[in-house]
Length: 259
Length: 259
DNA sequence: AACCGATGGTTCAAATAATGAACCGCACCT
DNA sequence: AGGTGCGGTTCATTATTTGAACCATCGGTT
Image 1: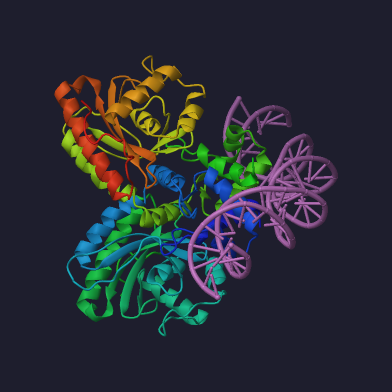
Image 2 (image 1 turned 90 degrees about the horizontal axis):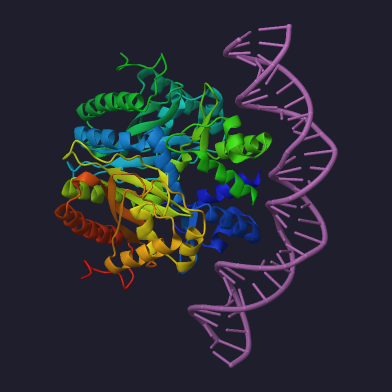
């Protein structure tokens, strides 16, 4: 493990529920030597990736990450494009929507939108890190990922988030096959109970799935008619997002519902 | 210079007009050994900070920067808050507006908004890296920065972007003093000719200026009345932004126009 | 006021990782 | 065919990273 990788891995301990981390905490979390963490964080700080609070000297993510994100958005806009698409999709379906990107062995949610239509809704936080196997977004990505990548994900221990989570690799593989039939993934309560989630993959310029667009609704509201609405809207929105970011679906991707 | 710093410095060669860089180009730009660049970029790629294009294998910024930005936004929202404020400020003034953050010896623009009111307007790109001494945003930040930081900026060679750019440190220091009188900076043609730019500093929780909010207008349109409008709107918007991000202006910051 | 257990920060010999000149195969030009 | 530039690789040399132990300081407890 190179020094750079080690330093950058420290950034992964930041999370929505842990936005600030002190030196000692970070040392424990990372199982590194305190002096090492101190020096690495010093370098990350000098580069603007983290900054230190005045009072407790805890580290938090720095302004450089905003700059780099703005820079990436300037050449390959995903966030700005998806914001509008999420908004429309939420309005159309009346439910909570979100986009995620696959990154290593995790799926990271980037942005979300709510609908004001219903008082009860699925609530979300941006920048959540979730699993592939338990989420509709993750499964949608896996269904169109390299077989060897799927192998690497499914060969790790799979966490059972709820008692409905699929954790048997064979069952998951057959689920992926089903998803490829329709081009659309859905999970019922496999990440959070009472949540019925639908997702379509988002493709990059190289025809590979880079992320997913999803609609999450309370299971109680999910009638057959509502599912049809969501599926149709999601297909359209997914195609639009893939297109707007300069991506292209693979040739075998179903254009509409498989019969 | 540590290995981590070296690796992270490679990211600084990405710019709006250079979103993709090949290995050889990056080697030349950075004056490092090709093998070193190759290995460092490999580590950055494994961490998701950069990704490689399929065809020419050129590097571009990766999805991890979006994740980290979303993460920072979740705890300290600046982008999302400033977007609304920029929108309103553009509508109110009829001109182009933008926010920037000071970072090291440079000022980086994060986001901007246009007004549809006039056919001619100042155009901008996000994620531009500009100088402190030639921009109203940079001067607004400097006016409320640590004296020793000001020294470090003004002791470097100062580029003359136009023949109106202030490059004499003493002149700049007296300009900073003027800015502190009113709490508002303005430059006329010092970064780009024919552009009249106004800016107010944005403060963090520690009372230090972390960035600036600015209005840029064609000089031809800048009447005294229009300046009054802009100054008043900018003051209000700056105070709102500082407040919304949990920041606080220093005690001596002028609340309204100095008499 | 002495103690305790934290915290952030520092040291320096030993261990390890980074470095760079040269090289390879390849594609695209003349 | 020969030249040029590209991404990628090798390996002995070199310089950096590492980590156990240490220090100063803070806040709570006895």
